[in-house]
Length: 452
Image 1: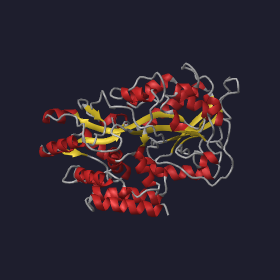
Image 2: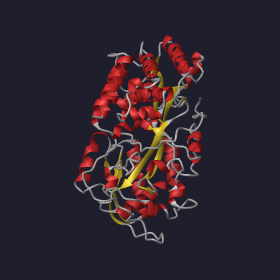
Image 3: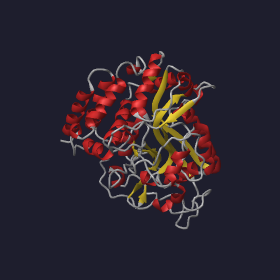
Image 4: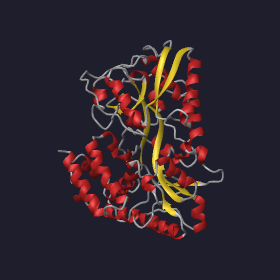
């Protein structure tokens, strides 16, 4: 499948919140959940006067293109609300624990990522404790620039990713998907067709490797990027339900029909020099750079890749995309796509919930959403916003109400014991330290032990 037809069919209808860098998932407060939003306007929908300081968490560090983009939005928001002063606080990567500590100390930033887990009936501990504001009252009001309410402006397939029961607790910033990107020039030069099956993918890798080019690049320093290869093979071979049960300790991974075959396919994929030399010590930015420098022909990555690396992509570089190939004989989902939404929440104990709610509505403005798509290549979560080239089918899918399989299987939101049990054997296989059968045994035993 090429960049103009990313999906073969709708993805599986299982929804979770995706955090690009890390998920924040715990609270010790036992209070009851908030039932109403306290900001953004009165019951009639009339806007409240917005004043005071507003602190917004950014996943992007100061100096990065995305931080500069957010800085521009902050200046525009301040111009729109003369009495507001916006501060952007980095809250990604190594700074995630600091943001969580501030939530625990009842001094949270006003607008945050995480603090919402829609895979749990109560939305997770922060929602259950009332620390994450219920946005449903605001969602039922008209949203400027759209026909209908704020809730109706959000793509139907995205709404489950931000909802707990009948209430919405997060506002989507964008949609992300995980698929292969490939160097069109290398494929054309070597006469390679876009792989449709896993066997096609292995054959393409053999041809590319014979030409002296690494078929794939990946970072060896961030385990989820290696994990997603296994996730996709498991999804294709035996499906989402069995994998989720195994991660929860409710089933033995190694005993699931198709699990052995998935492990063998992963071993075949990582064996014999298919990945760029030295990837074990390469961070994700360097891995992405090696793709755009032509050192590797393919990279399995999120839809944020083009926008994230825009400044480093050669002007004549032609990028194609294709969904993770199907598996002949697999009993799992052959069309499912991993993805989710980057959503922001309002801290109920923040200093300025009115301004925070207004900020989320400002991000949703059609002009700002269109500018986001055009400047980053990202996918909007809102209706009527044109998709970037190559991702039109994603928007169509979400308009029809289909949702994603949970990116990284939601493992980032689970305990460190579960993360280690699931991810470390995969990394060991990639590093050539164990074979596929050993990886599967270690994962299965580790997950059972983590479940107690």
